Amino acid sequence: MADKSEPLFLKLRRPNIRFLFLAILIGGLAGYGAVLFKLILKYMQWLFYQDTADWLTFAGSVPLWMKLVMPTAGGLVVGLVVSYFASEAKGHGVPEVMQAIALRGGRIRKRVAAAKIFASAVTIGSGGSVGREGPMVQIGASIGSSVGQIFKIPRVHMKTMVGCGAAAGIAATFNAPIAGVLFALEIIIGDFGVMQFSPVVLSSVMATAISRYYFGDFPHFDIPTYSIVSLWEYLFYPVLGVVTGLVALAFTNSLYWLEDRFDAMPIPDWTKPAIGGAVLGVVFAVYPQVFGVGYGAMNATLLDKTPFALMLVLVAVKIVASSVTLGSGGSGGIFAPSLFMGCMTGGAFGYVVHMLLPAYTATPAAYALVAMGGLVAGTTYAPITAILIIFEMTSDYSIILPLMLTCITATVMNSTIQRASIYTTKLLRRGIDIEAGRERHLLSHMLVKEVMVRDFVTIPQTMTLSSILWTFKTENAPYLHVVDEDQRLTGIISFRDLRAVLNEEGLADLLIAHDLATQNPVTVTTDDTLQDALDKITDRGVSQLPVLSTGKEPRVVGTLTELAIDAAYNSATVRAEIAEGPNRDAL
Image 1: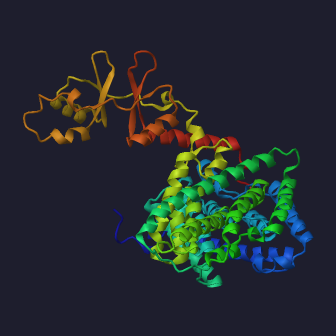
Image 2: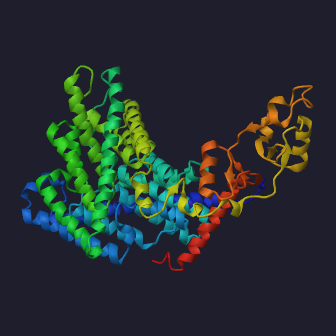
Image 3: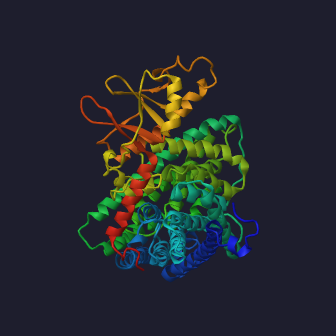
């Protein structure tokens, strides 16, 4: 216990207190990064089109040649930046942050923040049909990583620094501090522990305060008045979840299908975003609603001003426009496109149900609002974040139940159909299978026999309760392996299994190991991979597994603990870092 007379300056030097101060610093830097990004984005749009207003307000005055040439020029600039300055700036950015945490201990090159700000601003300013929220995640994460590297934060805590930056980026851009926190914990860090929660909250609050100081405390959208007209409406929201889930799957698969087509082109990579920009120019010359972030078109739908047929068409057009932008190598996020598709999908869905049952359903705008969350959940597999983003944008508690039904339905359905989200799919395509903060590829190349513990305790299945208790006292073993006459495993006993009979008198010499053991325990063999073993440990909620030999008559040859898997994984990641060489984190 710490001395109560310990000076205050020594208390402030404790690691957990130091992390809180660094979290505030990261939040402040990320908040100003968001302010800078928004200003540069406006400047870029003015540079390309001499106007900073919403595209729909002046699209008619822009000549056709400019609509075709400017996205092409913007794509050319982005292609050069991505190819020759920072390849991490390509795409929507979040997978790169997840990869940095899982494989490089949260270290991100310091140049990434500047490259992402510039590349995304050029992409969106010239008309790229992507969002600014995703880039801010990568920008904030890069800031958090840079601060962590400057202050020499230990590897085990670096992911918290990165999470602080990601949370600050989302919070400052969406004006949604709670959603920023949950995004970082749910997607980036993958851990809701107190040591992660407190710094992330401070960063999110700091960034939101800075954003509100410069831009005010108001939502991005013209939010309709929301209310449940009748209890029968609750039957429609799971259906809406299914619909938004299907659109989300279409978006994810279209994005990576087009990315494959662009990757297969036998031309220099730096020219591909320009080709995507040219195609995009043709698209928004016909459908100006899909230009850039698209908030103007979403606001029109939320005010019930978009025709039914146009909403249906815009869902498909936005999928194409966003997929072309990102698939060709442009820079931007998938949050805003998901919100856009959800808004149009929900508006069309609401139009149908309101037309059929006008007395029992709300207006189409209400369904458009809920579907925005459903489509974000269906693409990211982060329902908590999706629910809170929409809730914070509306500040209306009555929307929570419809949001929960829609978002959970979309997430469960899509994760059942397709295991990887729009983020982890990108990593899988690189051969990186990340789950719960781990890169599964490393564990898939290590065998159980390499790390198993060969010092274990076996007892015969005829051993009495009194002897079992004595064995626990003398051997200091968490589990006892029960074997038959032929030394084949028949069960395992933990001290927890004995609690129910400890106070029963007269049973000490009547109960035997066979009566008390957990029968048919989950096991692994010496030739199984550590990933297979970890999957079994996770599925069954146990901390260790008996290891059997291979062959016709397997015998117990060891035990494998979760701690041993963790140690093996950490060693493998360190070896991988060393193999990458000393310049992997160069500017």
